[in-house]
Image (cartoon, rainbow, N blue to C red; front, side, top):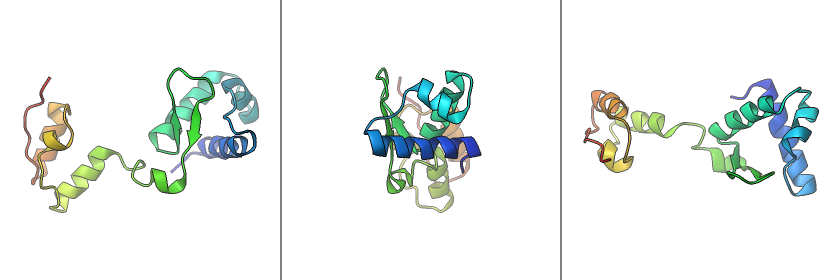
Length: 124
């Protein structure tokens, strides 16, 4: 679920990318949203990216891609939560480490405590 400002920014991005073919600058987004700083836009964009509504390319100006609704279907639910749901439903047949190498020991222990998943030590 998005906050009001996140929803407004997402709508603005969809319109601007559709019209101009490129995303607006941080300054343009700040003006459109009525914010006094680009830092506020940065936080809103991070939230949209974490929720799977947009994708940003590092170190490139205006590199924001608004993802279609279908592309974000699984991005909304984090990988860990999906895996826990599968473990609870008895569908997880592989080890946590095999599915997600590098996960922290705590994440593996939490999943193993739910039953069904094996916790193998992380390789570094």
